[in-house]
Image (cartoon, rainbow, N blue to C red; front, side):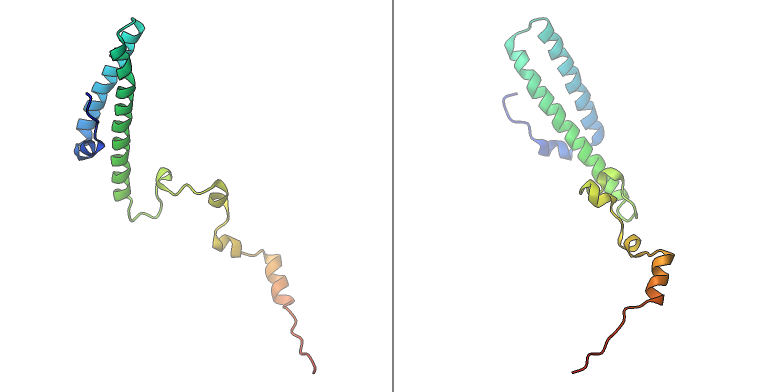
Length: 124
């Protein structure tokens, strides 16, 4: 396992195959951890980090595929799922929309209509 692991190959696989391989890797990680507890050799202990990184790569590809699938199904929908929406900041997400900002109370409306801005003509 000295050669580098390519994520490109994972993206071409089907999700079912990815999940099977992921389960194998998780099983291997459990075995490595039991060897660690029973004072195993250093070569196997060094492999724990590699297996964990490989599991992370598999999970990343699986999540990418799921997100892309959801994006394609909700392409023309009016509301996106929360995890696909833009993060922005909390203040930006909470602020009023343009139409909400433009709304006026009855009192403001009456005041504006009954007492419009006065126009003055200046003499020269």
